[in-house]
Image 1 (cartoon, helix red, strand yellow):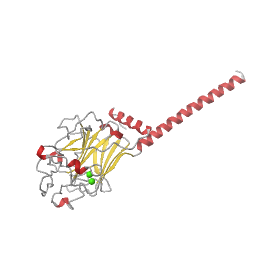
Image 2 (tube, rainbow, N blue to C red):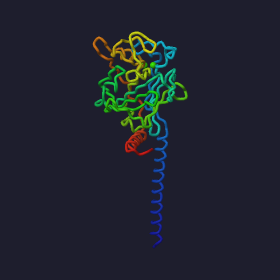
Image 3 (cartoon, rainbow, N blue to C red):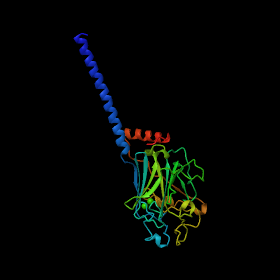
Image 4 (cartoon, rainbow, N blue to C red):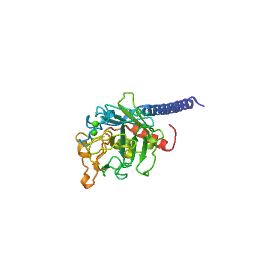
Length: 299
Ligand SMILES: [Ca+2]
Ligand SMILES: [Ca+2]
């Protein structure tokens, strides 16, 4: 081989080596980036709720038993946020006071949160999964997913197509009071909630847990009693919702839109979607994770 040809071969070899190393570098960078994004907690949605509106449409009064002392704060949602980390969603609900009078392992047993998610305006349901909250959802935003956060290992995820007696999905789902003593965190694997979380709208409903109440809601009647809220009606047309996540000035109007004489329940509106825009990376990663979870690949 002539000296000229050898030189060309060496140059080609060097170029190939460079290309291979560059590809390996890009691949390592890509994997590294994906791993970093996967392990980073990222906020998807956050909304504060006014303080001191744990009075339903504005008229409700706490029951008289001493476990409801100081007759405020237990059911006063102050902030709701949704975040993602790894293959999980966290739904955080912040209250000024969280108590556990019945000693549940979740760390709370007084407050109950129900989160309905609207993911598609053309599909879903506008009535609650079970009767109890006594409200109808905005027909423009029917719900597809329902997360019920209650104590005693009953927290579960339901889909709009589930039949009324369905027990709900609870694999990997948990609700737990956080160390700050104010935040109830509901954790749900992403595979149970397919769809784009940046498009979700939420109905976040707060009630008082009653194991014997309709859909575990403590009831609201006309007259306040030891274990019953007052300031509503003795019918099933007034909401059993003590606080609703809503934009300022909205809750009283929405929860007060029932008419017992006409047998009409209140129609409530959702909040959202998120104003946060994910990066291309984050969007791609979310899709891959949901796909892998649905294929039952362990992450
Ligand atoms: Ca509130
Ligand atoms: Ca509210």
